[in-house]
Figure (cartoon, protein in one colour):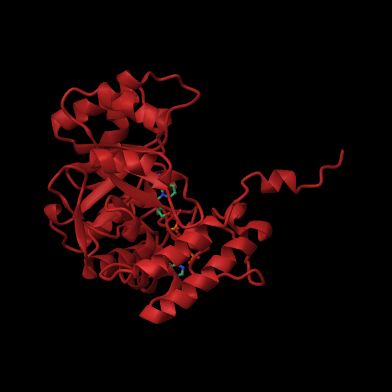
Length: 324
Ligand SMILES: NC(=O)c1ccc[n+]([C@@H]2O[C@H](COP(=O)([O-])OP(=O)(O)OC[C@H]3O[C@@H](n4cnc5c(N)ncnc54)[C@H](OP(=O)(O)O)[C@@H]3O)[C@@H](O)[C@H]2O)c1
């Protein structure tokens, strides 16, 4: 496994992390032993960077990840775990309460990096108020580093300027070969400030793996039930790219999943994909995305084909026949 460092810190993290949203009802993996097998294989393959969140299974993901790490005998400094606090909890009453619960569920003693899951809407929490409340957790040692997920750079700037001593070390953004908006502002900003970008949905929730075809688009019973990427009119375009990933991968003895993830790590030194996996076999494939590089001509070929894919997010609305 290749490694890099987290933000401006000295923390060593694997070049590919593991997302643990899968350990929840949303993705259907609620059997602890199955989740433990996923974590175990990830550790064996050198993955030490794990992501979870308070809202994943309403604590179930944090609990399963923490229990697995404990039962597998992992030493505290061998892993770097990020968890996320939802925007709804960003008031001075809820922040310490929620973090205390998260610490209990994870059982790790401290949180390596706590990210704000998404910017607050509806509650009108001022940025400086929650930034300072979060910094207190760093000062107390409950949290080592702070991060922001799904924040636009304007708000990142405002958050950072509200901190006294701590800084933002990690971002988390949707970033994959068919959803590349993060390249416009967020990734250049992160590169200039040495902030790690955890790429979420790095294989477009499975759409880039080659497992699904336009003829075999299962009706998902999970979080993907109405995902625009899998809508037939979008997926037809995505699938053209999958065919290219397959053809390129054959030259290297790699799968479309591995090519899609390798393209991301080859694109920016700060990007660290955090794919989710539901089995040890999926983890093996994911881990095999690091330790090699696409040749520039192949990277460019994929870049060009991926730019030709545009996803419509209004598709379910626009294409719906509304009768009254
Ligand atoms: N900050 C945020 O707002 C946010 C949002 C979303 C996710 N995240 C984080 O990012 C992580 C990953 O994102 P994601 O879960 O949305 O999507 P993803 O990683 O792009 O896709 C994961 C899914 O792809 C399929 N898959 C994985 N490995 C595979 C393989 N080797 N071969 C074939 N299929 C494979 C599995 O589903 P099937 O086998 O069922 O097809 C798996 O559940 C999450 O776990 C979470 O930690 C953060």
